Image 1 (cartoon, rainbow, N blue to C red):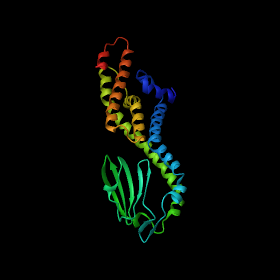
Image 2 (cartoon, helix red, strand yellow):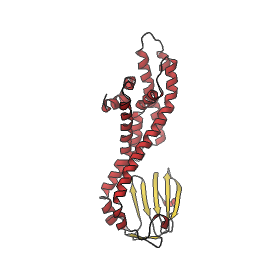
Image 3 (tube, rainbow, N blue to C red):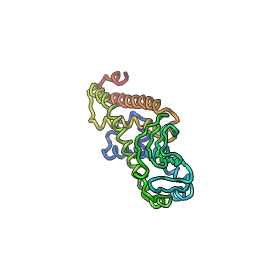
Image 4 (spheres, helix red, strand yellow):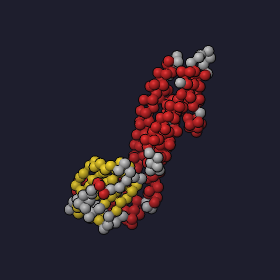
Amino acid sequence: MNLAEQLKNAIISPKKYFEMLEQSLSKKIAYIVTICIIVSMMTALIPDIAAIAAFGGFKNLFTERIPAFKVENGKLTSADNFDLNMGGVHFYVDTEQTAIDPEKLDGTNDLYFAFGSEEYTSILVQTGMKKEMYRFKVSEVLPDGMDNDSLVKIIPIIYISIVFQFVFTTIFVGVKYMLVCLIFSLPFSFLLKMAGQSRNTFDMLMLCFYADTLPILVIGVNQALGYIIPPIILSFIGIFILNRNVRKSLVSLNDNQDGQDDNDLFRR
C-alpha cells in the first residue's frame, strides 16, 4: 500500500489494520514519519510561514514594521513599544518599564520573550496562568550596539532556527504519540494473547498508531486553529476512537480465523 492508501485505511477501515501490519518495516516507519511531519507542518511550519508572509519578510519587519531600537550601556531603548506575535510566540518590548510584569500579558497558550529597558523575561501563559521561566539582565542577552540593522544581519540564522524548530517539533510529536500508543498497546496485546494469538511489541504499537491517526490529525488541526475546542475534550474523544478502531480490527482478525469461537472476547 502507498501512503495515501494507508492513511485512508487508518481512518475509515480498521478491518485492514492487520493487513497493513504485514507491510515492510520501512513502510511502517515512513507512515509514522509522514503523520508526524503533517502535524508539525500544521502546528509549527505553516503558522510561521503565514506570519512571515503577513509582515512581508524579516527584512521588512526589522526595518519598517518594528520601531527603531538600540542597546546602549546595557539598556534597551525603543522609539515605541511593540508586540510581535508569531503563532503564539511573542517578542514583546516595553522600554517604559524596567522589567515586564507577567500579569500585564494576555493569551491562552502563549510564550513571551519580554524585554523591559533593563531586564529580559521569558514568560509562559497557559489557560490564563502566567509562569515566569527565566529572567536576565538585558546586557546578558543583547550586546551593546545592537539595533535594527543588526537584526537584518542575522536573518539567515533565524531561518535556520525555524527549520530546526520544525525538525524538533516533528521529533517531539513522534515521541509523544509513540509513548501514547505504547501505553494503549499493552492491554490490547494481552487481549490478543487471551484469544490464542500474539504480535510483537512494535506491531501492537503500530496497530494503535493506525487507530490513533484520525485523533492525532484532528488534535493537530485544533492546535493550529488556536484550540477552538478544549484539548481535554479532544483527548477523551481521541481515546474513544482509538479504542473503538483497535477493537474493530481485533474482531475482524478473529472473524477470519476458522474454527474459533472467541468473537465475544473482542466484542465485549
